[in-house]
Image 1: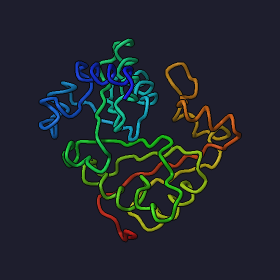
Image 2 (image 1 turned 180 degrees about the horizontal axis):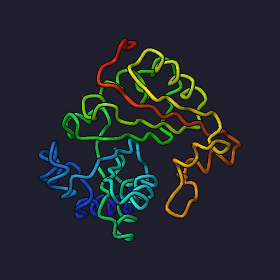
Image 3 (image 1 turned 45 degrees about the vertical axis):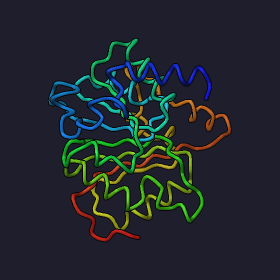
Image 4 (image 1 turned 120 degrees about the vertical axis):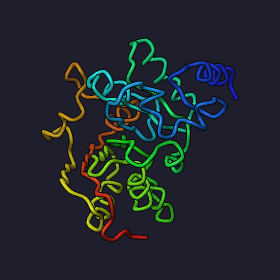
Amino acid sequence: MSRKKLQRFEENQQNERVIQAGKPNYQTIKGKWHSDFFKNNNPIVLELACGRGEYSVALAQKFPEKNFIGVDLKGARIWKGAVTADKLRLKNVGFLRTIIENLDQFFEQGEVSEIWLIHPDPQPKLRDAKRRLTSPRFLNLYRQIGKPDMWVRLKTDSELLYQYTLEILENEAISDLVHTDNLYESPLLADHLDINQQAIKTKYENHFSEKGHSIHYIKFKLKEAATNSNP
């Protein structure tokens, strides 16, 4: 492991806005994000597989009346988001270092108000379909931690993940489904503008755009119980 990564891991350990293994609140934060971490009762929004936290930080700036948590396993990536949030003196953004499969270990039922999935790994191999973050397995996980009718938003350059998600949602308990296969030619782009009315883009999206990939977007409200979850 490089010296730079080791230094970033140590800085995460000292940064109060990062929750990770080895810190006392890593084991006790479940159900206490409002009281112990943010110290307010504002809605909690998750950015899953947040990478460098571009969305968590930009949305926290835009919506000071909401709390944002970026979730990722990569400590060096979370470090970037945490440092940026510190520089901007944002009080409504934090980061959780864990695997997404373990979300129910860190959030109580109804603790989360909204979920953003920004360019997650599309897991293109058929055998890995259950690992896609919009698979029935994960949608049911989100139900375990979310409020009824919470928004779930997916932004992706992957045509495969976009079409897969639309197919999955045909058999899920959802409402208010809206989608576009070309976000930057759609009025839905308004969901992705920062405080300066500029499009929020991750490092990876800039890379995708340079290759000419279209950006797809889906948003929907997730109901409490699935009508028919696919295996």
